[in-house]
Length: 559
Image (tube, rainbow, N blue to C red; front, top):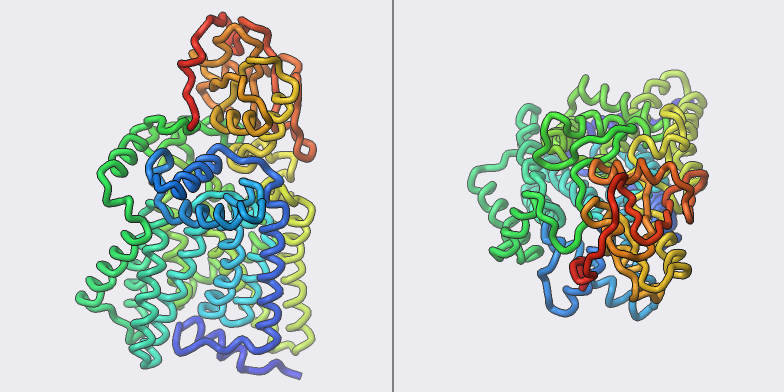
């Protein structure tokens, strides 16, 4: 028995982006719904299992300020949309007595779950229903994508809106080629709104995405064109939506803050560091870094070590097929990957969470490869066709699902076995993968056992202050691990050392402390992620430095 030829026709139509997509049908629809439900469960379960990171705490503080009518303060280097959503979550979550960590991460967790559905729709549009379902299944259980969608950072929503942008552009092109001009124009406005939402979430040069995406259609057989007049309408419409979503951008104070931030100013007690660990070495990690900047291989290594081998292999095959054939749907994929990579390669600052918006492209490329490989077996009979499909799903979706089950709730600690396994998690991306996990528990222990008026020195002093006060210790003093700040009071000093927050600025102190016995250790799995060292009054963590009395009033005060 041979498989139905309609599947081949569906893939051909999808690759050319012509006409409307094939309806899901009951079976596909049920499976996509199951993917969404599974993805939602992974993203919401145990959302407060890890304490606030420094960045997340500032999102929490900003959202609470929004509810008082004050939109200034710190964190103005990021637009308003995500903080506004957190403020809405605060209103709901407080009534339901949710924890602050859950409230702050909830918009991203829900957005990440919704991204699974959008991934299914985009996969169906670009490569057919089977690819859409395959991509949605990968996205629902991807251990690293889940892990980075459970933190309160803008990249999660950016990834969702980028998928909506590509979906609208693809539908606009397909509708125009199908003679549905009015439908095409509606999707153009949808793309404009998605672009506005992206720019209201993060200030990045993503405005180039739709321009280059539309231009890529010009080299294919298509009736789709965007006139200059239409382009101007869409640009001004998108600009208007952007200002409505992020109206603080029109204020001079916002621009001044952003300029100061890019110049390296410390605004609002934010943790500042000019270097970061990557593969066991310190690199400069600022936007305008010099020759010793974070290497451009950062994200290639991330893709290699943070995906299971089966997904990685399929995504590489899908990328090769896309470069080889360059069908209209594949052109969109190539534009997506190329522009994202160039944008982040130019910048000297690189963080693992920046990969979140490109993960869907990996899933879609993997899904397209799976559909392509399964299609090659059609001529040999339906039994082999089904066996190959099941095998590909087992070798790609299965390991991701198992990794998510075994690494929950610390999903980000996964490292592929081909890259050394989880024992190497502290070597590749410790700053990003741990994201201050374990710090809350360390401060809780200090709060329960520290002497009255003791000092706590760490890299994230505001987060230390927040949790110390939460655990009933308003008497503690706080500093950061710098030669001029750490343990300069004549008090017992607790130095909190975090895996991943190893910088050039604190290197000598951490190297000196590594030879001492920790007073307390927080472990995640088999790794010591936070170590607390207890120093007597007058002892500094920096070698050859004596402590000296300094007034507590000189410490930065949190609001």
